[in-house]
Amino acid sequence: MHHRNRLLLSLLSVVLGLATSTALAALQIVPGGTWTASNGGHLNAHGAGIIQVNNTFYLIGEDKSQGSSFFAVNCYSSVDLVQWTYEGALLSRTSSGDLGPNRIIERPKVIYNDLTKKYVMWMHVDSSNYGDAKVGVATSDTVCGKSYEYHGSFRPLGMESRDIGLFKDDDGRAYLLTEDRKNGLRINPLTPDYLSISGTTSTHLFPTAIESPALLKLSSGRYFLFGSHLTGWSPNDNVYTTSTNLSGPWSDWRLFADKGSNTYASQTSFILNYGGPGNIMYMGDRWHSTNLQSSSYIWLPLDINDTTVVLKNRASWIPNAQSGLPWADSPAEKSYEGEQGTYSGGAREVTCSQCSRGKAAGYIGGTTTNGSVTISGVTSNSDNGGKGGVTTIQIRYKNGDTNPRYASVRVNGGAPQKVAFEGTAGDVGVSSVVVKGGLRKGDGNTIVVSGWEGGAGWGPDVDRIVVPVE
Image: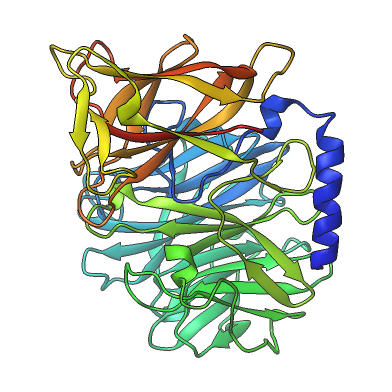
């Protein structure tokens, strides 16, 4: 999309946004922050893809709660790309076989087959030392039904396969994107039922070593293929190539994020075209190799101008997935220091070298003390008819454990929200979790962070709370 058109669409978003609900307009994506889903747990869908069915988005990805070993393939649903409902596990660990203990299942992707009326999942299947290098296939009658039938694994065309992607073209044909370190990245056509590879040759072979492939096609008929260099769990400057034909010729690989940014410390997982003018989202994983379950997501809007792709980093942004308006930058934000709140129970100020002022509100929760901190005087310009607009609230925190801590968050005396604060041990540092709450117009808003379920265990150290003010 031309940058001038991007500006015009942003102005259109502002004008038309006056007629939309404040509750929708204020819901933001916070790249690098973690979501708490409807089940009170961390949004656990890594290496994920999204399939849209009618007006609902289904996020399907790896459950990393057991580290790199396979535990489950999870599914979440959302109508706005911000609020996620846990639908359940589509595949779970079995006692033996491909889905057994100490196995690797990565990058599950799902597409719908119009002929068989089946949802078809492909995934990377491997041993713990990554020596098997296979793909696996499963099918279901429903997109997030708990009845996916696993059909087994194999090497496509007899070649190794590790990172994979899946693509369904607008003519109904489907393709496997498969990374083979001995031969390169391949595009393999699938059979009409999408269950195996069609033919004996690849549609195209890229000899360059590229993994984590994701393919996008625009209405212009142009394809964009994204991928990462091979640097293990460490991020790098991801690249893309473009063509008007899957068989090629393809352009030279080019950067799409700022050079040297390592794609804002992320690795490509999926590219989502979610409708509306220019609404294309880059979905990347920010891996924390020493604590994979605390890995987070970098979701950012992509700008595409003819054959040029640009990805810019943002602290937060508004996808506008329900309204059909162009995505928009977030409004101005204001921070409130946790240690400057009002304490009760055993909560008190603690030292936090990585926090914004070297301090935080600590000893939240606790089995006997149930410490809490109350942040008062929070300002918002939301109104929504005096009822308070549902908006995104960020809580910056520290949790020195590897496992999550849980806390209760109340906004303006509302129902407590169970929030998962993932561990920040190792290479994570201070992290951010996203919650939603109804803020009233003015400076009389109150946010309370306390122990969950009567103080069962410690909560996080609260660095600061960040809210939009416009």
